[in-house]
Image 1 (cartoon, one colour):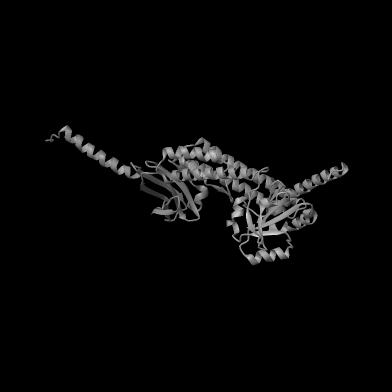
Image 2 (tube, helix red, strand yellow):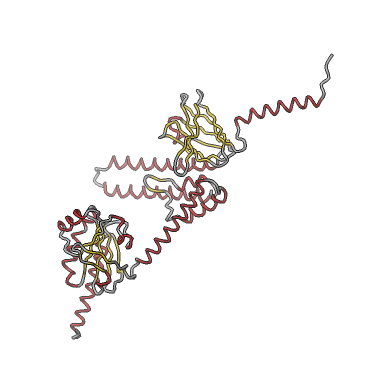
Length: 411
């Protein structure tokens, strides 16, 4: 005789079974405040796969998992915020994954060449990064081809013309890389993948210079900070943008202060002989301020031109003032004597911390400021020939005016 089982008990049994079944199933899916990453890498031999979190200032080991004999792996990570993950079997061959809560991410590729072969799905930001990196690799391959062409032809008769042609192609490759990155960011203004792109280099050069693309940086920063106000990388980007904007404003102010036609900033410093040199006390003369250093080959190379201008124009009203960024007094004095720099020489012996270098915004040596008899900046350049042309024209005009006065009988 069959026993009667109430329908509500059957329902309870079924519910319990279903709950158990779906609970087990959830082990392979991301729940609330979780990220699930799984995948398969070919050519794996039970490799250890490491998961590191990329912070703003350091990298933190998160976890690791042994890849199965069939190349599969899975990892569940608890997190309430997005994570920038570095995933690798060895430090030199890694991939970057941008994971957000409740994402189920799948990875595949060749374990021996992860960075070049991986694919990712389930994370739009990571897919954006993958797209960028694959295009980057194609552009690097193009550069490798150019390098091979040069190696095979560097002793050819037309090598200089070939070199110029290859350089031009290389520049165009970089421009295309930059344009590609910028377009990706503009199309994905709220993606953390776009943030990753901002910090990329192509060779030794940053792909997107923040000083030249501050609007792009600021727009992305505002969007990401609004969407992820507590995410460390979004906060860091906002801070970076604010610092860059301040630097740009300072640079603009410096440019206005040191622009041609402006009065050259005054200063007073002792020269090599202990005599005080105050710039404003030399109005009526044409002053050539020459920033240099004894340790700079480029500086030494241009000293012969200074000797030429001293010999030809000193009696006509040109004063040369060499301001060194040296830090060693003996080296400075030795160079002055050896190079026969018989004009005004000044040095604070503070290297690049020199106050006068900051006053004139000197970021490289040599550098020249040509100042007229009124104390106005006529020209500035890192090349003596540029200001040299102005010296020639200036004194040529003075000669013509003096000749005209003599013709008219004026004193």
